Image: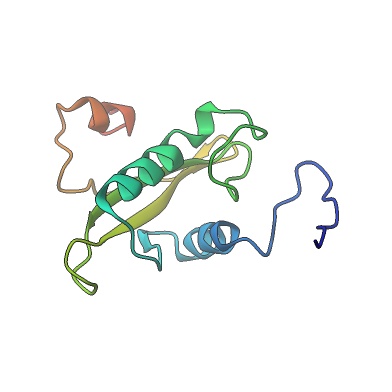
Length: 125
């Protein structure tokens, strides 16, 4: 059995798929597609875990690669470029270290009166 070298607490796992995916999304600055296919239930659960990651301590987060103080938005939908029945996840950084990024568009599933839109700050004027 091989063992991994111990990381210092708070240091990102740079070789993790998710750490690389979140870093690419930070650089992109807009919706970024996760380059894997998922079942419907898995896509919904991962998207939920990403969206709620800021509510959990860094030790208990289900998705690695989210930095302290970051708030992410995630959505999932059928994969148009994959096998039938597979789904894709898209992620976007909403807030980093207490500084809010301007959200200029809402995903089509959101309406200005929906609880999800209010949580994303759509009704803040």
